[in-house]
Length: 81
Image (cartoon, rainbow, N blue to C red; front, side):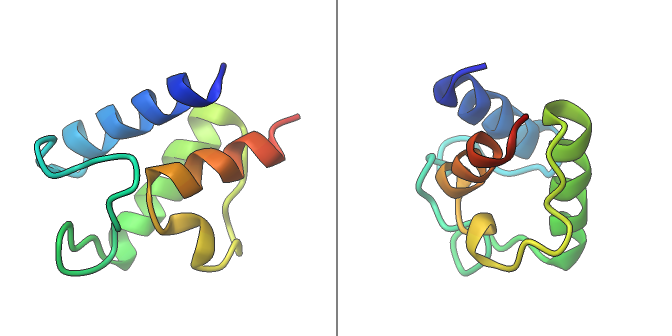
């Protein structure tokens, strides 16, 4: 799966499972903050989704990979087998 496919799948997850408005969600939109406003419970759902869909564990990854869809996709790409 290439980077664009990963980003597309992540965006669909954010919209369907976390209720994020697709009109304000871009690949570089900050996920935790004023605009989108995800919280720690959402981060657990992100970890679970990434693990089950991409086979990559984000547990203990720190905050950096969770900044945006771009950073999550980059993390997945670097850590996929």
